[in-house]
Image 1 (cartoon, rainbow over the protein chains, first blue to last red):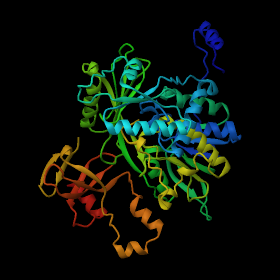
Image 2: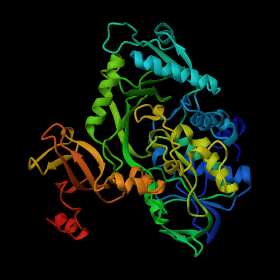
Image 3: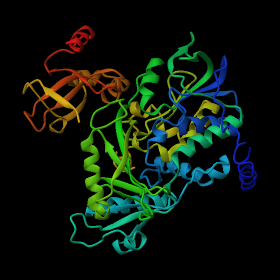
Image 4: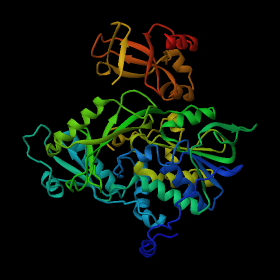
Length: 416
Length: 103
């Protein structure tokens, strides 16, 4: 059923009792052309683009838990593309391009809100670094502009720009195409659209092994629900990528860390954009429900526990209150942790692996949500063509041998 | 916050006193070995990590305590430490880890 004002009206007349399920929960068939491991936004999106763009509809997405229950449901929903390097600008801005029309494309409201991301500069180094980013972005056609403290204040009225503060605002970089989206909707929207094209979504079905033939190529995945044959396998398993890759005998340049976030009780609209401050170590936005959504930094040790330490949250909240004393009395409702897979250069790995038929999309670290449509599209392209697109070609695994790293400081743990 | 037993102080102290220092038992090749090494082997030394889901051998630094490095076996699913030991000691065998868990 196509969602529209008309269907909403007609369903309302029937008391909203006849809405069809958005996507059926399938049991696995014997084999598929492509199996995607991980039903987060990235994996579901890859399945959708495989079906939509490349006509490969005999696809299954297998998920060990529930759909969108990993990092897709645990992030702070920030979308931006103001990264320094050409390669990063390519892939993150491609994602923003896709975000732009995503609700219409999926016929599902992902609530992409271009409310702007304002990165505050508090010292000379920040000013120089952000201005360098603004110039690099301009050359790459990525929107990002420099604001004086007065312009920052005009854009964000609750900001205190007095210069006698501990961390005075010396300016800011504003990306207006950036903003937030409703993270669950992204997973549900891709799932519904992919399902409609014939993709099977199989939940509660953990992959326990990757079967390979005599020639080394993949033959399928062993799962809790038995063996599923596959000509090609795309792994989009975020924090658990190392575990899945180990099943194919591959070791990856990844380390998995807990990353926490928290939300406050809902309040009236007060914060009209996303605010980030690298020097003070904070980022914050306000959801449409009114909650303040706050992201912390990663914990210091590797872990798969999906929870982190309290002192990390304390540190984050101190930073938020440093910038916005107005939030000092806000009560926090919930906090949680996700497991992020971090590469040595803080840039993702999207492409082929040394195992024939095995493809990977991982290493997004602390900032994968913003890239969801772009990464999904690139994984789908790479699987369909057995070769990377020029956008994701630089994000290969070989760069850790050849040395052509994409050392993206803008992807540092705090700045998402 | 984790409570970590420092084998040098022989005391359990809060995580705030410690800094995580990555996977343990990674030996830096000496100059002669480096000259002979392939790029792939150098990459393995520099970048490839076990990132294991389970018992992980890792290095910690008691930065705000005795200032010494030591190694630990910690389960990365439960975050529970099984044992900590001095850097000069060999990586515990699976049997030793099992015994320590039952202690």
